[in-house]
Image (cartoon, rainbow, N blue to C red):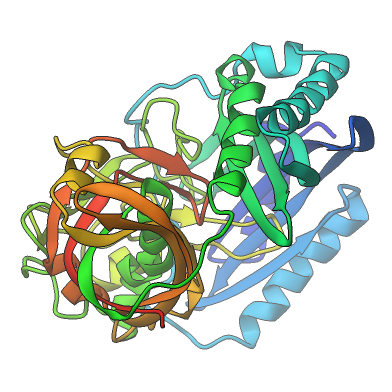
Length: 448
């Protein structure tokens, strides 16, 4: 399924003739997924999909329509449908499409080694992941899900203001979920790694890390309730950052549905906290030359030394807020209208190692996994969420714990950050979310 700038221009010409402003978005994706079970290839799914999306503005009313068909009749119908949908929307002075702007950074988003690696090699990679997990410890008894995945996408965007872009992007990833069993005890362990180059994936590392996380949790049980210092692992803290990322959207703020409605240049966290969103991060999974409206990608400082500096904007919220887009317009597919989403959103690392944080705690907890982060209230910031991890005693890891909860308020948590670690890691949550370990001075912890 070949999409080109010429195809986008021909569709745009039809849409422009019937509207005041128009935008055409074309996207295709080749997606490969290999699943392994018991050292056999369970499935190989190789899917190609894609389509056309049109947004048209007539009399300040926005209309949207999409199709997966590229024939002439479908395109004519699509234009008519978008125009018809605009008539049922309310007029809005802030609707509009961005002007073309020069690209802020050049980047290679397609490394040849993903496409150049044979299917046979990718299948062997997935099987090696499973073998590494089972050979790590004889208590690994079952595989949950073991998979290798990669994708190659092509995006074309053209609008009546003159935006006219095309780019390709490729990513690959490995996922392992295994189950450890000892007597009547069972625990699962999961690990994953995504990259923009196949050579940056390590099958043995992912498999062994999943196995380690399962085995080490055998015998986990709750600890007594109380207030205690808590170290959030990179995976746990990135999960929390992902959960509250919608509150960083200018749309949420403009609707009064964000815990950050106090506004820009207000102190919202410890001076140790610095949060940045960067669409141009080197080797970032979500790095792109342009966002999904054609605005050149950029870096945005959101929180600096605990002070709120910016929200994430698309063209609509920027116009409404009399500011500039931060290039955070994103579409989950051609079938969805664009919305605001982080690109590579991360907490900047500090100087302390995770071990140094643990060594300073007489009694507390290391949180490895968080359950129910989606229940955090995006307006108030209140939360009560489950976790599993480890009890810390006298500066050392003591034993595994589960069936525990931490509770509080996200702004209060941010303000009680005592240390930010040096061990930043990224995970594909909503966008590509990165964080190091974080030490929270005092949290309410519930168990038995």
